[in-house]
Length: 325
Image (cartoon, rainbow, N blue to C red; front, side):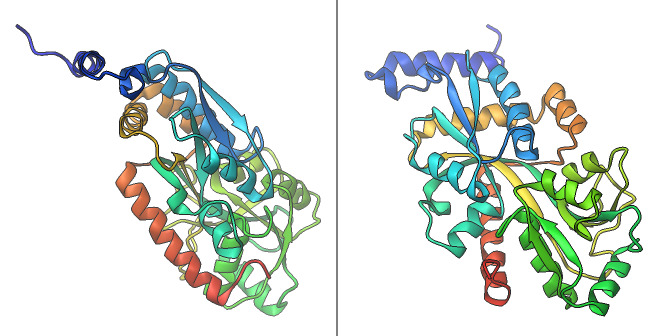
């Protein structure tokens, strides 16, 4: 008799589980028995929304008869969606897209309905480094130009952010700390309105994740000055990092999947398997690349370790640059 292939083996294990377990609800073969909701704490059309919809479409093909419904719950820099996720029934039918720094920075700056301990993490999907951009007419052409301008006019160079405590705001504070400069952050309700302000020359510069900045720059008078990653991005290899210029500034956003704490181990395993298979699926990989999503797949343990490292970094930053002030 020929050995079972992995898919047949997985299916056989589910059948045996149902046969052996008295309560069907405890058996992973019953999952998913109805649609799974995927909460996105940001508006439709944003980078996080694109990430969620791309992975949801793939996961539907990897889970048995699954339908995944993306629910946008924007507001309060992601707090509304994260609260809804943390308070959901931990049955595997509500999962969510979790972004840094918000999932970490919001509980640091104020009392929230959640901490990192409120979630069962599944996998990281994307790591989108931060960037700072200027209008194409700006005299700022490089990272060195930006630092020099900020030192010549302390507190006068305006920079658009996505709100207090957002990825862009915290990245701007990290740059101030590393370069010994003072910028003037201007909060907006997201990267899109901040980009409009930059193109209208309302602000001198703006923060955006790389995927967003590349999209905003397409066909417009927009110049990306530098990337806040530990290496040059595959999507923009000609744009220098702040590390290239001698400043250790790492910023941006990790985007991963999580559910409320207490989900059954079998459900977490099924969801994790689906994400793993997607990261070997050429359709998913092509769609992510086409929408400028810098993939960084981390399995559950690696993902949790990375989140804890970010938590430590942000707590250290808070002591010198509290972003709520």
